[in-house]
Length: 343
Image (cartoon, rainbow, N blue to C red; front, side, top):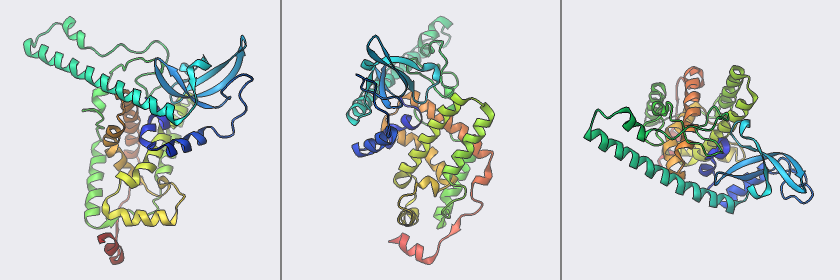
């Protein structure tokens, strides 16, 4: 249910060590909590809303009637969702809390899929019995009601208040669950990519521009179009999440076996550098192609998938409009590399 970096949280966090690194990065150099309070201004926490835990950031602290109150922003959602809450709604950004939250989300996701399956079965039976069912009958399987009148994130289909997805246009962007509908240009480039590897060629590294630079260019492009600070902050969260996911997934799922010696050499040469600063658009496309499998591994909900898919499709359109990001020719490999790759 997370947006941005936190939307892809479950895909990046595999161990307690991963979580602790993430939490320490989020909550470094914090001021002291208010007198009698547990949480500090600027601290990233979990906030309960509609029986779910949402990663949130404390923007302000005050003491009211002797009790601390916290103004929280739900990370990745519009500032319209920001609200004052008491300490009973907050929990520390700790691994055990996160693990329990993930288990609850997985259970709810399975329940949602079960309900969707039953609705589809009922509708299929009704269609078989009477192809000309009335409008009132067909409305029994309509999408859940939309959100309350508060403004939502431009990339969201549900908010912290627990609103259901509106369902408008989702069918055009994906087919089966978690299946990103890649545009034709991306499919063609992925085929070319595969053929180049089969021909024993490689993407020369480091790539210019690299994935990190491409994503920065995309954000600059969107900022110039929107002039909306809140929207830009939300989009930046999503892009940061995709960048982090790329860094995590590259060595595990985005490489052909033939590329692994090249990857190992890059790691040995630059052990502390992010791979998004080394690889380019060719491997970024592979991430989009692998998103369904990554979603399946993390048991991501339909609402969360819709968020990433909408951003991904917009980013793919940006890549299509900038073909200079892609290689004109792959690089032939040396006899020495061919020997290493054959071992």
